[in-house]
Length: 428
Image 1 (cartoon, helix red, strand yellow):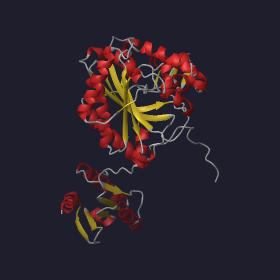
Image 2 (cartoon, rainbow, N blue to C red; image 1 turned 90 degrees about the vertical axis):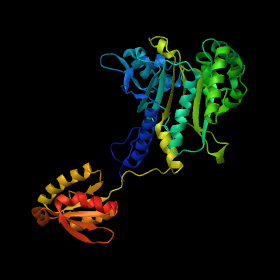
Image 3 (cartoon, helix red, strand yellow; image 1 turned 180 degrees about the vertical axis):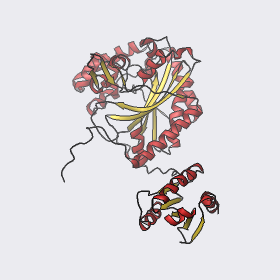
Image 4 (cartoon, one colour; image 1 turned 45 degrees about the vertical axis):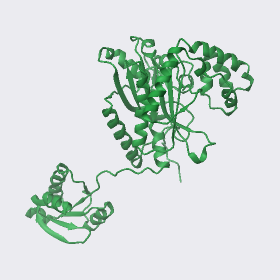
């Protein structure tokens, strides 16, 4: 067959009707949990000034250096498609004076991001994400609560085999010394590292710990651990995080090499993975994570404001739901099919359809067809319990035929009694 002239771009994908049920289920779950924990929804533009991300996310990150879609407008402005949400949320927080609202301020979001990554399973160049952000709170309980919120979302979606990893990467008091210590160690091993990591030693040494290249793993495994070099305040904060998590009963693993791929994190970082218990030797698939970013608001021009957040890729959750064959309740099943013959019957049926909508009874129809045989066939396919038939004669007389699809029995009733009669039969 000849290939179609137009196709989706590499790394982009359509969300087809059969996948919408997964997206809708995730959105419903996230929004209900967000409402329970008193998070308010926020939406930011897909386009921002590119500097917001180069400064906020970090110029040395792969996201900015290799993956960000940036371009100049005809007016000469350098813009970028949003590669992640947090800098946009912080920009909005500052621009709209949200620091003057009662704190802590809790926000959540849902929308697309864009990264020019190598396409692979569960990873797209346009991908959907949701996340939670909390501003104005320094307590470790917030860090633990965000982990608990994401854990609850995944549990509500019935996902299994979830692994949670946590770490602390310190703050401006202890991180500089650790970075120097780590750089000295890695320089002595640089010939065994990948080309990217040799550059990272100079530009942002913590990124080496985030490298996924196979040849770098043995070097990482022997590197100094930041947990051994935390200052007293960071050590106390992380101890509190772990104690709060222990109180929730959520199982987690300490990973002293977890840093995540963004520059703005301080202290707590965490990540959620999917791990098939029968394939422990294989790499885990990251599905979401986050951490604390206490300096980002001030760094982007706002007041000194502590903050903590999480984000996750929705397509990855959808893939997991499919792989684990997750079942969830179907939306209201179609209970009535409305069949009609002729223009007058169509006009009567349009009004009747609205009455059923107001009565919250799911109705299907094929207004474009005039063949009764074809419409009854359609009624069988959609699983309707009753078919209502309006022909020209019935429309003139203000009547309608109600047909029980299980028995084939039919009755002629007044058109005005159609909704009450259907209600009665559905209850029976």
